[in-house]
Length: 361
Image (tube, rainbow, N blue to C red):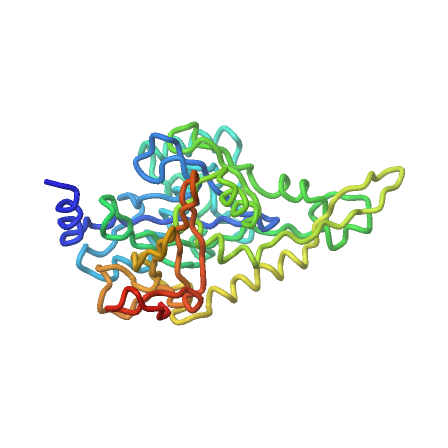
């Protein structure tokens, strides 16, 4: 069978998308975590991705394949997102049963033994967390789009994306002898004192785990230093304006306190509030959008993809994607193609039935 026939066959009978979940994990200083996938991975090889993965039996059951509720936010998706985040990065999004305002803390030994035992199905995740006096913090996950893999791709996913904000510590919880830090604190101290530093899973699926500002990840992508797939690039593009690093303030030096860069806590809170408010905007809101990229047309060295359709599994339902933006794959001579996000109204396209026309998409 030639390649054209194979493509036609896949389009007529696309593979069933596997339920999966991912987390856009925001640090106490409003940076975002990405993991570097191993080269040998069967999906997203060598790419930088959000922590996440397949739902497993221990996460709970989702509706059957023909039920559209299979593609809706639910407890199994939330539990899978938190479990996979722990397995892949070592960061456990669980609250203490005795004090639900605090995240559950672990020793390094508990953490490493637990993440590998859970990954190897030697123990059940929720039970393991309960035994340590906690519960998975599924209630603080904020839905932030769902993505269905296009039908021309053999391995397809129905991926629920979530935002999760690691707590910003109160300034008083960070040790300092300087009254100038009542509303701010040393940036490195804020990072290290509040969360476990993310680590790779030992090369099983990832080789590195790192928090950086969204704008910095996008700059690394633009300079061909990292690889991003459409969902990761698009969502980083969306959140970057809200979580842009605020200019550090130089704390005056003294005999006891050398100069240091400090971060403004009110700014961190305002950034988060603005992003959360943004997730509720749009029609449908970003908490409910379901996106399946669809090729529309080529423009020279550019290929344009719609984000409006939800995928064949949800065709004819109320579910929709983003009607305001398109993704453009740009080919540059001697360079791998790179994604860009543009307003749909700014992209000039031929009219339907007139490929030489100049209508807008």
